[in-house]
Length: 250
Image 1 (cartoon, helix red, strand yellow):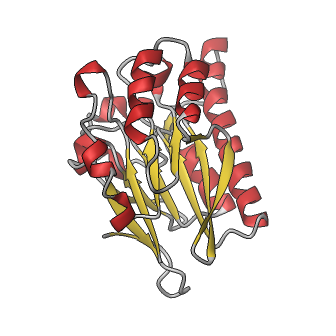
Image 2 (cartoon, one colour):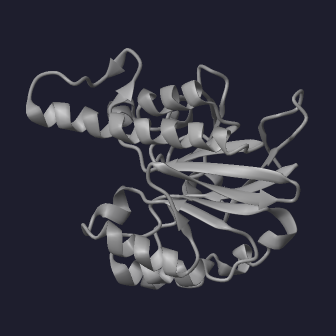
């Protein structure tokens, strides 16, 4: 059994220094890795990123992250990424990482993702250049996620996790205003997951959404935005036996 701790949308700044560290220090008792699903900072400023880095530095489990839209706001995502990596965080964008957990290889594929909407009510690469660019950005993120998941399978991973900031399904957006669904995620992310395969999908971004969802291909999706899970992290279990394989709330 693999224990996956996850949280997103912690939006750390000077006023939240040390807020999550006491809980994170307990991870060795309940989890094998920690996933951070984006929006780790308030405005994507380097000093905020350093606070996040200090919060997770030296934890007893691997820490894997993707950035969110807030982490891009100050237009310095590369600096934010470098600061997190300096603290030992694996930051992913269109790539994957493999971790040895006991006797099993666990792979995490990550991308921030982007908006666009969901099947039947989504944007398309048609019309003005701005609209084409919007949807192409989402498609590019989805393509990177698909490739990363495929590479993790080729690497022999027993478990594969898709980590995004934006949602791949509308299920976990329930509670958000319908009008903003296109800005909260895209079906292209779920399509990539279903085509490549994954055991669990984790995202954030939707603060008023719902924790549980599922793709049309049967991949279990969890919205781990901190305002949704209302704790420092949620833990999900991945079981190796084929009849039990999947994610469930601990």
